[in-house]
Image (cartoon, rainbow, N blue to C red; front, side, top):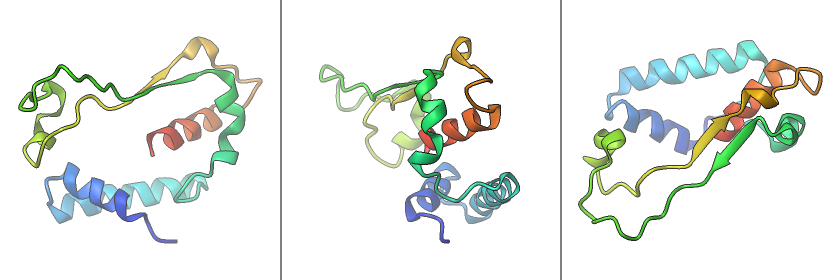
Length: 118
């Protein structure tokens, strides 16, 4: 399996196009997935049970039409140098009060978190 091109690009952008730090991030990702026995891409059907518990809330990206085009988001200044930023991205909220280990394992909840962030 090959890593998706989008993932490789994100690693490069995150490390400001520096190849060596991006390779370290990618290597860590591959080691973790291999050690956990998870595939490179987590299929949706493998995380259906934790999805039904309501532990994770996915809040969609905010689309605010009243923000000036030259506004720089304080939490995302680095990426705005490369081009205009669309604004705050979606947000994953972890509601630990809904975490029920009888519904599925903690690893399943962690896997679902990774699925959402991908």
